[in-house]
Length: 149
Image (cartoon, rainbow, N blue to C red; front, side, top):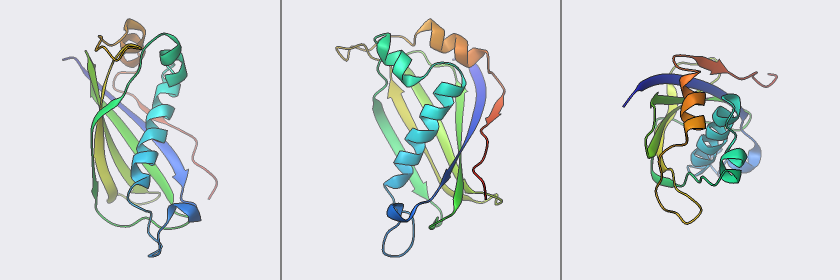
């Protein structure tokens, strides 16, 4: 596989509805943060997920993992760093690090693996447009505008 080394930083503010009775972000919300960050990355490199679907490609999650290091709480601003290490062939792996703004110790880390499939869920190779878009951002760190503090 070809190394790509693309990093994207996506920001979210924790809302009250995302926390549990202990004032911590409920564990399943991290997968929503991963999804939000993944969609933002695709938009930022010029291949929004909706365009991929319109072209007949789907990217279902076939594997996922999340490790929780410490709690995020209401009103925290979180940075979700998404990293693509290698250009995909049939599967795409994205690694995530969730940080509290202004801190360097991770709150959570994880990954998702996606398979490129057609509308009938038959595995296909990653589309050339997708590969070219990632390749054009190789080695970059794309940083979104953070929300106001």
